[in-house]
Image (cartoon, rainbow, N blue to C red; front, side):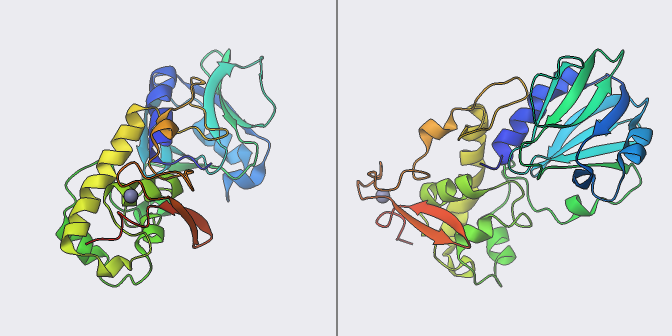
Length: 275
Ligand SMILES: [Zn+2]
């Protein structure tokens, strides 16, 4: 599964006490394309000697803030950051490392499928990847009216629109289905044709579902594991996701799975049909 906001935020919160105030001595990488247009020589040269000031998140991006810039990480499908002894190298699939302090520990980037990305940006750089991101889902304050306005030209079905990071940044395929169930919205309804009551419910469901998932350490399906090696438990509370043919806990109807924009959507065809 792809880590979504609750999983990335869990990673950020666990990494923070492990790496803040430590100094990066050097960096290495074995998959050049994960660095984008930078070479590992350039990246290592830029981060060398810089102290880590904070670890934060924007959408699904992890921002490792150093004195003169930011190391921007996207975990994509299978990326994982963790700190371990430099010599131990406990796993295969280690794609990059930031050697810390006296070189005894390394912040490792493990990524079996090598789809994750790493890049260094100076403080003054404009970071294109971050500039188009939408609202932060954990923050309340988005109103039904604001959402109605934002979606007025979007004729696509609401569920794939929830995956668009320019609307809310951080919602992925699991939580989009869950949010539609909580808000009692048909995932196939055109995004610009929801009622104001539905926009209002959606604006409440997004922070509710994602903050609840964060409390549970995110969801672990197959391989998500936090930096401390913990698994999330929100998958036990899924209302519809991955529950095709089971009974809806609200109305008892049978949960359906359909394909939308090449992704699976799970929903209840009875109680998500109203206005
Ligand atoms: Zn139902």
